[in-house]
Every structure is written in C-alpha cells, then in structure tokens.
Amino acid sequence: MRYEVKIENLDTIAEYWQDARSRLKWDCIFVLPGWIRSWWQAFGADDDLCLLSARDDNEVIGIAPFMVRNRSAHLIGDRDVCDYLDFVVAPEKETVFFNVIIDYLREKDITCLNLAPARHGSVVCTLLSNEIVRDCGCDVAVDQEEVLVEMELPDSWEAYLASLSTKQRREVKRKLKKLNNMGKVDYRVGDGAAEIDIFLGLFTKNKEGKAAFMTPKMQSFFKSLAQSMAEIGILRIGVLALDSLPVAAVMCFDHDGVVYLYNSAYDTQYGYLSVGLISKILCIKDSIEKGSKSFNFLKGAEEYKYRLGGVEVPVYNFRINL
Image (cartoon, rainbow, N blue to C red; front, side, top):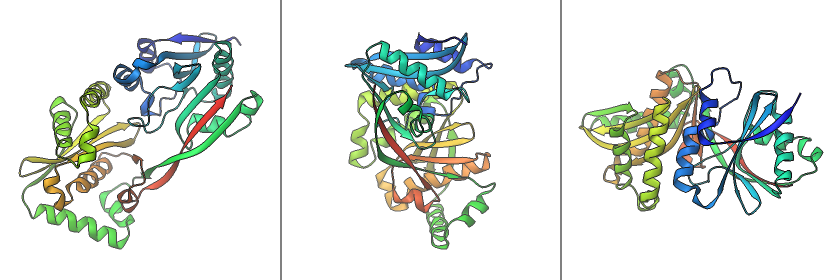
C-alpha cells in the first residue's frame, strides 16, 4: 500500500462529497463542503487554507479540513457558529489516516494541532483516546469545554409526550393550549429565501444579546449557509405564526436521520406566550412525524433542553504538540 497526502481545494472536497462511490463518512454537518465554504468566505481571511486528503493509492481515505496560522493547524471553523468539528474518514481507516496526516504536518514544520471543539464519539475523540497519539510521540492536552444535548426520537408524538415527566408533559400541553386560545396558530417548515428572511428578521426582535450577535457579517454568513444547505436538501426553517404573523422561527438541518437545532429567534412582544419554546416543541413534533431518529439541540446546557428530554454529550478541546 502507498499512502500519500494531497492538498485539496473547496471544489475538490465538494466532488468527494458528491461521489457516490466514496466511502468517506460525512456525519458531522459542520465539515460538509458547503458549510466549510460559507464559513471560509465569511471568516477565513486571517488564516491559510490547508485542506488535506490522505490517500491509499488512488482512494481518498480521509480529509483533514485545516487552516494554518503561525505554525499551528486548526480544524476549519470557530466556536461561535460551529458546535463541534471533526475529520472526514472512511470506516476502519482512522488510524492510518491520522498517522499519515501527522507525518505530513511535521514535514511542513507545523508544531501544534488544535482539534476543537470535538464531541464525544467523534473521529477526533476516538483517535485521541487510545494509544495512537502516544505511538506518534505526540503530547496531548485535553479539557472538557462544554456539553451538547441530544435525544433519540420515538415513533410517535404521543410516545414522546409519554416519555416526559408528568409535570413537563402538562406544561407542554398547557403552553400549546394557551397559544391556540390566542388565535390561529400555524407552524410550517420551508427551505427558501422567504423563510431565512423571516428568521433573520426575528433576530432584530429578540432579546438584546441575541440581536447583537447578528451583525451584518454574521447575517451574510447565515444567508450563505442557508443557501448552501438548501442546495443539498438539508436546510429546514420552521416558522411559527399567530394569526399569520411570524412570531418565532427555528433554523435546523436534517442530515442522515438527525435533526440539528442550529439557532432560533422570536419576537419578544410574544414572549409571554412562550413562542420561542413552542417553536422548538413543534420542531420536535414535526421531526417525529417525518420519521427522524434523533434530535440534536447542539451546544449549550440550557435547562429547557433537559426538560424536553435531552441528554448531555461532552464536548472537548484537544491540543497536540507535534
């Protein structure tokens, strides 16, 4: 076998994603080619792009989406808009992929590798929790950064409600009833420009800290990301309307049976009706009805996630001195 590393670009990794023959496992939405492209165009000006593929003869066995600054390599992305990051690797090729990439980085005089944030169970965590790193002569520092919250979904909405505590089940029903008593309630899911405009517009009507997050640069990123994810069929924007007026929205991605709740916004005028929380509840209901197997609330330990059935998954920082 002949292993080598090749420098790729944003177009070639998109081709690997589209190649039906490829065995690469693209199970992290934050390293899909469209996501990387949108992030890089918005935030990558201060770094050097370093997209690497590891190959076994002519077969691509893995992709390391790096950016480089001052002899330090990082996975492309940042904590503000990427909940966790990872390598893209073919099954059972993880060890050889890592060894080949480490050898290449050393040859290029890279002295530090930052693999963060990385969720428990990811390729990064699996590789760095065994003997591979020590065998490479690397020094690893690790600390838990945060948690994400996710849950398996049952087959029906009734089964989901039954899985909640008695108190929480009553609370969900009470909030839904209260909102329905205020007028005509509609929850619809779309993936077009109209929905992303509604979503972004609601940010300006949200609490001050969240509204401040949506700077013009961030808004441009969200629009680019929405377009990229819509093109590959995984964007879902749920809009909650009261008497035809949008009062809350959720931006989600539906990928390989998992719905990722990426962000949300609501009109604070309707906060007393819990429209922000209800939009998430109805998103869960819609996900169940469409046959999704898992719901990922993503990073953050907000109490509502646990009340709605979520379970913690650790998120780590790894720093490797080469």
